Image 1: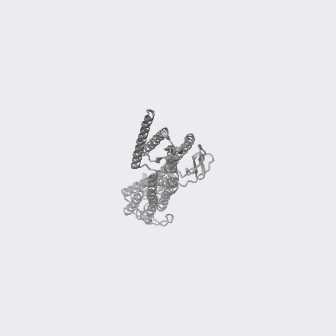
Image 2 (image 1 turned 90 degrees about the vertical axis):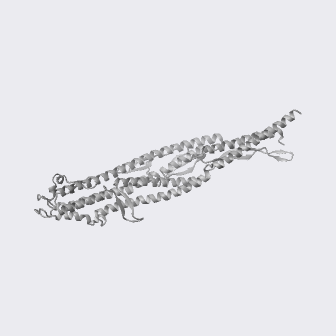
Image 3 (image 1 turned 90 degrees about the horizontal axis):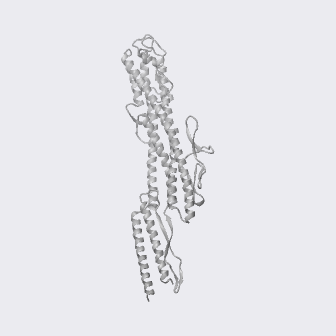
Length: 470
């Protein structure tokens, strides 16, 4: 049997066990607001039994491990959904910037509609309307210098708007390229952090024969931060390391960074991502890196192309009609606009210097004749094959609507994604999160057990005193 000394040792082990439980509960309480923390439990088991006079007899309990309560399945799902959200958030931000650069507030009329409500007093739609209204005013009073000056002023305003929109979209593209560069730098730092944590976890677990729970929590946080930047695949390597690969290329193996990300110019300022040492282009499928590139090369590039196409059509159509007309001085053959697209279009400086040279008449010497000015005004309603049978204003509205549809689609997807992530996060919280009520209950339970163990030791001490004094 145990005897008094054996029972004294049982009580001492119990004190240590209950103290370990209190320490773990305290650790959980300290991390109740730490989103990266997974709650821990002390694993208890009975001590080795001994043979007594009446059979095998227990020698108490002991703490054998500190167990982390975590679901690998939920971690993997959240990691994957984080990549999707990172992509959608990057696209949303880029498209919102594009909308702002148009100086236009886009309100979708209905889901799937090809029309949009476009507001903004100083946007291209307003500029086009002002230009054609001015052509109409000159056709009504072709000899008026005031109307001619007003026309040229409105035309200058419109060309400035086209140039500003093109410049802003160009700056947005450059900013998105910078965002790609920044994300690549962040991803490389996270890869280095994960490799370092792999090393620390391996060393800690080899030296203690336990699990480095807190380091594993930190590593999982880094993995999810990396997943938001770029979609990754994670595999368990030797000694519990997290091995990371991107688009099939191994980036982290054990405690080594096997590869890093690098940006490169694929031509025309198109910044893409590849593996640094092998120069292998990577096909990204998630994360903010992929979202930024998709928005830049998709909706933003399409928007800039459409704006330039619209400007080119305006320049061409107006110039063809105007060049055939005659000015108040009888001159002819002048173009109304110079340049080829939104980036370089301007009003002919000859006309700006002398508004009387605007060629409003359709016949030579026809002072007061308005055939060309009227044709220019009627251009507002002309359906152009190059714009898919739409007028210039309709073409602009369609361009804006396409951007609005892209933004609306991303907003809807992001809203749905947030619901999915919220559900997964709640599920993980129910498994791994710290409950104040539960921890306080455990704390009280271990406290009472500690007090009872101390009482046991006190009683055995009194019994030993009695035996000694017999």
